Amino acid sequence: MELSTADRRHEFVGKMIEAAFKFMDSMDTEDSDEDMDWGGAEVVTDDLLAVEKMIEAEQIFLDTLAKMESVPDRCESAKCALIFKDGLDEFVQNILLGRLNHAAKILDEWGFRSERGIKFKDDFYDKIDSLIEIYQQYYDEDD
Amino acid sequence: MELETVEQRHAFIKKLVSEAFSFEDSLVHDSEHQDDWFSALNTAEDLVVIEEFIRTEEILLDAFAEMEDVPFADEPGRKFFMSIVDANLVTFVDEILWDRIGYAFDNVHDRYFATAEGIAFKKNMRDKLATLMETYENIYDL
Image (cartoon, rainbow over all chains, first blue to last red; front, side, top):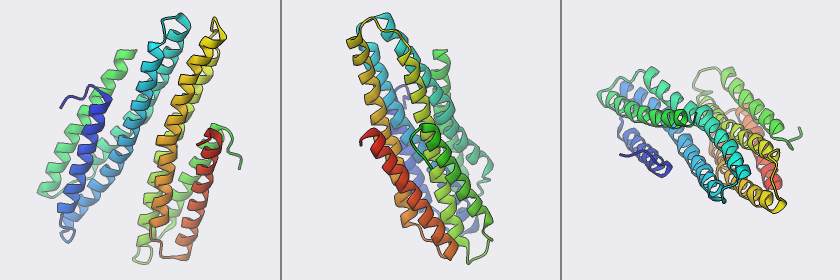
């Protein structure tokens, strides 16, 4: 899945959340390993729900930036757009990436035990990692 | 506590976050306190997300203050530009920040607390979150 636009990233995270809920529903909480893994998935899902909302904020900021950049080219509007872009970068770097890294850390440190739990962990780790990479690139390009 | 400035609101939510975590920390891990412990932990996590969005509000407001200093050749040009910026801020506060405070408010309202301390904690959090929502409604005219 392409992740080059905020809309696609939003959709990507939405699908992950759906998959996480499905995974949690499928776990047998009477089984101690699966119950433990259920808990890990729950914490990660909370992070993803926050990330989903943050990407909605990103969409709002990108729309604003597009509007600013469409103002007839004058040096003051270009200057303001740059200031706004710096704010957006700060948001991505400190807030959004912070949450994604938190989710990756939980996955890494939780100690998933059941076969399905380990599969969930590997799958979600890869997906979160590709999001982190996209956002890091996005940030680097602006510097 | 005054909540007029974003710094004051940031301090307010930070205090709530630490109150929620210290309440959660203070609970003995036995069956009597398990519901309260779980509910307090989830409440604290909702508050952390609000804190992150208030930090975002701060970033936006800092950027706008910086833009105010950019000299514009003409006043209508500046006004038009700043109207884009204002609309952005109101949309963010309304759809993201205020929405997320409402989400935390509903969650704490629905969560089950078993002990008297837990019920007091719930009431306190609900009242504080309601105050915060009202503050945003007034400041941004939502």
